[in-house]
Length: 105
Image (tube, rainbow, N blue to C red):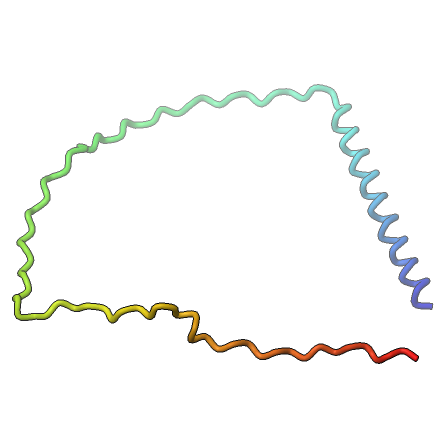
């Protein structure tokens, strides 16, 4: 019962899609066969007011005071040395056991 109802639903969907495609193509053909329609008259272009001109030169930037320097008493920061080979410290992945098929008689 279920396979036949699925088949009939599929048939109905295909039939509706083909009918809608026929209707669409018929509408397009009828639009192409219409006589020449009158053209839309062009509208007059409005006159736009002049935009104000903006000066493109910028005022000079104020000079910034110089930053104070650190006293020489503060020690310079250094980074610790990098290990020679960082990949040696990574743990290894566990082995996954594989299953073999049972022996055939």
